[in-house]
Length: 202
Ligand SMILES: O=C(O)CCC(=O)C(=O)O
Ligand SMILES: [Mn+2]
Image (cartoon, rainbow, N blue to C red; front, side):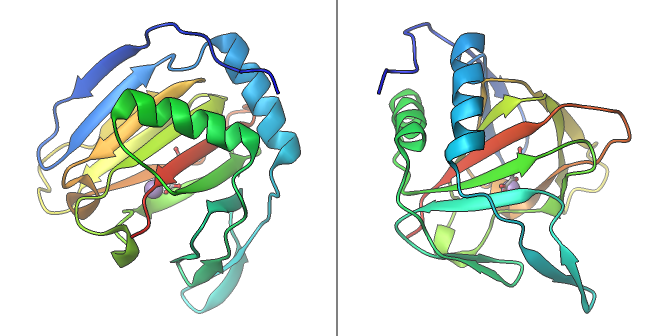
């Protein structure tokens, strides 16, 4: 398979947030790369829509998901069995690991079909991620706002960042213990988006 990536140096920006280390790389992947990757992921990933229990009622998750890597993962009462990394996921993972000097063994993929698809407030603090987990989040397709709020320091304002096509958001330090994040719904007519979060399951 052809290499989907070029050798350009991406823009790197550190976000100054208390109790967190967040680095944002805009255009980590070029537009041409991102378009090819989006298409490959949309077609080749084994997307599923899980049921979740919220306040005693069963709902379909408002997005499609997939879990790749070597270990099972459980969140919100869902247990996801891992599938072997695809060629595309491995290529993205290698690029992310090279830029961040980190190592990941798992990837959660989310496919937001339109503005009704979303992800509610949460923190990625499952115990199998360990203390101060590093999570690398890569986005393709429609840009969507990513909101963050500190869970203890109430007067601190919410922080919004636009996760653009081809961007990489690296979350490290104590972020997952002190901050929640979400992808809000919107009534605007918008395009589809795919996000990958690389994680290290201990
Ligand atoms: O789609 C996103 O940017 C957020 C994904 C996320 O927070 C997660 O998978 O835990
Ligand atoms: Mn998350």
